[in-house]
Amino acid sequence: MEISILGYRRKMREDVQRSILECLEDTADITLRQYGLDEPAYNPAPPEVGAAFVIIDDAKALNALRKVSGWGENLSVVIVSNHPQYALEGIRLQVRDYLLFPLTGPEMGEALRRIGFKTKSEVNFDE
Image (tube, rainbow, N blue to C red; front, side):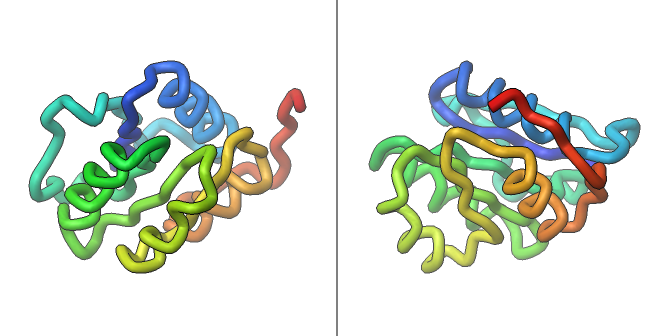
């Protein structure tokens, strides 16, 4: 299964990827791929893509989220942002979860469980 991480800033994508890897129980069968929002990704997403974490930090990224949410009805979309004001659009697009930076282990773990991934029982983050 693949988890796609989409966002303009590489550092933010890497933070999301690190957080996901620290929370997942077993990563042997999971591929994480990062995409800049200007890069072509999928449309529609192939069946092996189970989740997309989309980093929203401006209106341009919000437009990309609208495209991602149309990739397929079986795709779980999670918004990651510094800005809580984008939550309303997330509700309209029926995203599965909305995480705010800075990411914490319990929040990421809960988001991963909501979209069907097994997580470690306890995650320790340097906060």
